[in-house]
Length: 121
Image (cartoon, rainbow, N blue to C red; front, side, top):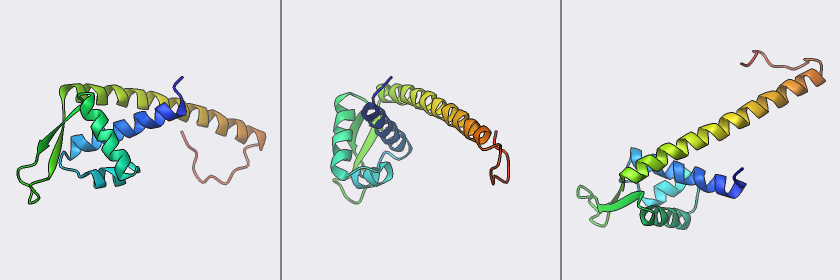
């Protein structure tokens, strides 16, 4: 089982790769805001992704700001994103199953007396 810290790092990496895949011209500031991390952490994340060969950095020619960059997923980045997505889904499905079981236990404990208007799957 992965530590909570490594799970958070994987989640940040996955979110960054997904966002870069959707919008390669996203600024570090926008990436940081959308992932929920600091700009410094976004810079560190992007640097690490580039160092691992998961993204490459290029100038964005259509930008009014000629210092603008585009972050492009490499084939290794696409494969890593797919692997992280599978890992994320497995972990979240396990959490969902555990939560469903806990809810069922609590409902049995209180004799089914809940205020839910609709039953959940």
